[in-house]
Image (cartoon, rainbow over all chains, first blue to last red; front, side, top):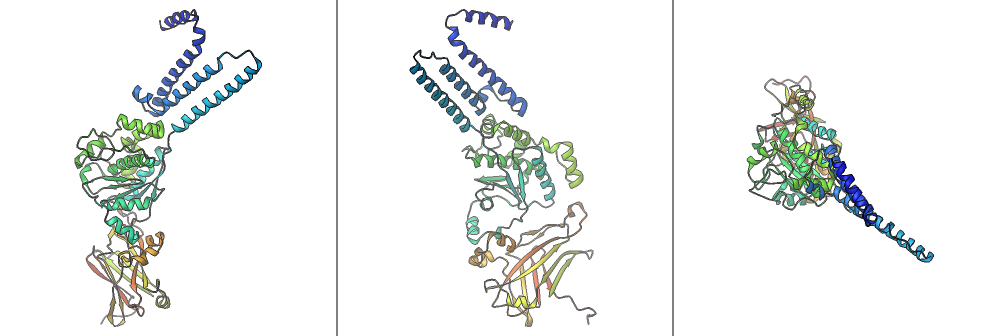
Length: 337
Length: 160
């Protein structure tokens, strides 16, 4: 049926006197549309990221296809123009063509470069202290599992003992006067080029219960036990993933300005900070990225990174029989879910 | 010269042991910036729980002949900022008093094997340590216990 409509339409258009001039443009546009559909399906199939149409059309992926279509349309316009009969004019026209092609290629290439995604860098994890009975080796195993199941970034554990007294006296004075002394210390450890997550059993300050972040450092605290009956391992795995995303975004200056601003109204977003300690469990159990967060990650780090984050945040990887069995049999660590 | 002390559990097994070793001559001639004598303590944790330490509340007193007691500086960062800040980061990391000594490896699984060993450092004003110490008294606040670290009794010695 659809084929017949197409045949009729194409036959009708072919009979029009202007069709010959318009046909290449229409074909390029149809090809571009098909490329957009194919790209959206490819992203959904390959990375498990199915986005609403509007969201996909605003993404860097779609933008690049649009850029190529625009470039090809301009090339068609340039190459299908009638050439002058005069030899001198023909030569000049050839130079114009060459300059036009170069300019189009340059603009498309620049657009590609400007819309290119960032690479997610490695994250250093420093285990400062853990609650009594928590096994550092089990946590280390969980972190190594995270390295094994994805390749978008990797965690490295810095086993150097965390000693606040190893700071210089000037740094110590500065951190002691800071609203978040541990975050101040983590920032010093992170330096200029080592995004760091510090895990501590000590409490954070100023009614921040679970995690705090600034620049290249994040601190996750296990002091507030309201994540229970979920285990500390599930709590740390979830928060480590969230803080990793935050660090990656902030490293490129892309962390949304409202991220971690205090709010009393929450939809369960991973970047929302609700000063209610009971809000964490529901967020963890129904962990997801909002469409805006999805779009942000998609455009900054690409579909692979987004797919990885969505997969990791659910903690399903932690509950696979192999990981669960290793935790139980080797480390004597049972999980809740 | 080796001085040692230990904390035993209810079953008589070692929970923690402490050992200080030095050569008499070296101890007398060496000091940090002509200001501090440094003593290195080897701490072994055989127990199934971490040992909490505190630079503010713990004390490692050095006892000289005639029972002259010299207090330690476990937190040089607070006591002498300029000297401490002159050390590079890795040296500060090594010299800083630890906050905890982990439980023995494997202890969580109930099969403690070799102990967790950590070296810690104590500083003493050089001008007060005029000779080689006889023994040390270590107060660990989390244990609420004073531990003598001293030379072992000579073989064959008997209590009278």
